[in-house]
Amino acid sequence: MAPPAERPSSDRAGGLTNLQKRILSAAVLLPLVIAAIYFGHPFFAVLIAVFGATAAWEWACVAANAHPDQGKVPVPSTPKGLWFFIAVLSGLAVIAVIQFIGFPSSVGAIVVAAVGIAWLGLTCLSFDWRRIGWTVPGVLYVAAAAAALVVLRGDPDWGRATLVWIIAMVVAADTGGYLVGRTVGGPKLVPRISPNKTWSGLGGAVAGAALVGLLTAFVLNHTNVLVLTLISAVIGLLEQGGDLVESAFKRHFGVKDTSQIIPGHGGVLDRVDGLLAVAVAVLVINLWAGGSVLAW
Image (cartoon, rainbow, N blue to C red; front, side, top):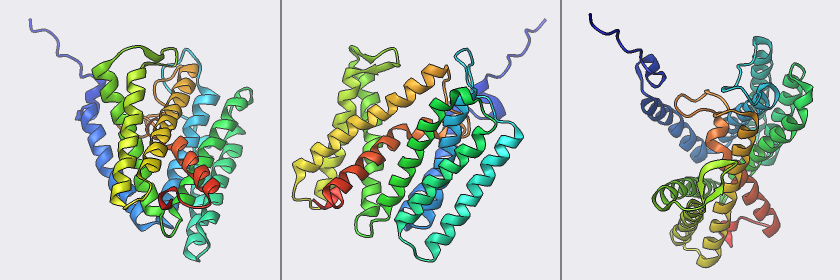
């Protein structure tokens, strides 16, 4: 008698492997992100509103519903999901109107932050208030980062270059950290939070971001090559810090991914954890310096 056929693994659910899902998701999302960065407002503000509100939803779901013994993030019930989409669509409509009638990008940034805060209030009405101490800071952090991205892209002279520089640093830091960490290995960085991260990987992340700063300085004919390289290295360090913050958050609540909203990738927060910290850091540097760091 022939043995029973093997049951397909979860990675092949729907006929696609996890890698194929990752590739298809990236093929859909990457062109949207590139186009939004290139064309700027209102398209970029709308994109950030969607991503920001989704990231806030993921954070609140984990903080309000997840427990240490759970292996996945619970899906909100229909009323909660309905409130979420109402808040997002309302925010998008306001952002579109504001941007099309010519108000400055800072107004759009404020609206992005307001969407996150308003959504928090609506959703938490049906969430566990005992966990509000985790929910509020996280959603405000996401809203602040979303607002920072909109403000940075709104710079008429340096907005597009700044976003390309930021994203390149984040990608380089993640890639450098992964490759060096796996190749060199060595002592763990913070094993209780992220068991796979090593001190060598942290060095690789900083080096990757510094390399992007160096290349950016040459491409832009920057006069202060060393300054931009050092700033990029520090930002690479902060990017890893943002990654660790989200890892600590997920480990505290016993979840692997913040959601499964992006097939093959997990949640939005899982993909932009480092970007959130970098966006806030770059905006703070720009405000302190009185102009774009790329113009120094």
